[in-house]
Length: 208
Image 1 (cartoon, one colour):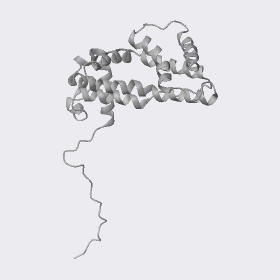
Image 2 (tube, one colour):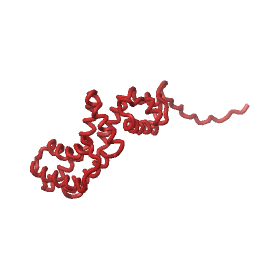
Image 3 (cartoon, one colour):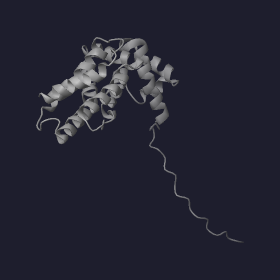
Image 4 (cartoon, helix red, strand yellow):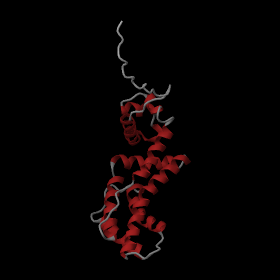
């Protein structure tokens, strides 16, 4: 009787805990994209998990595995906007940095999806404190870091005095464009508006 040499032992395969679901990132991103499209198409009040799933090409279960309700889904996505941020301008001058910031922000705010989603969420925020908090965080923090960077760089260059009130500066930088693009929803910015706004804001900041 012959004996076979011992075969190398294979390490035991690790299994996911019973009941654990493996969440595919591509499915998660498809759902997130579908939420923005659904919000723009029907608004928050009429938006449903069924509609989101249909638009994303997945089953409702795939959505519920990630978020337990449409409220939590929207809160998660709106909150994520806060950490994405905007590119930090670095043109070498305060006016140049403001002009570049306004160009990027204007394109973002006037995007067909954003122009529908933001006003709708603002209306919903008036009725829902959780959405109000998440929307405020997204809109505030989305520009806070960039605006603070612009002001700090201008302080270092001597264009602004040291110790300027950064909260007031942020309001002055962000307010006018947000008002025109989101609040009154001007269909088209006048020619030369962004350049003029950058010059006026630069002079206003120097007066603080």
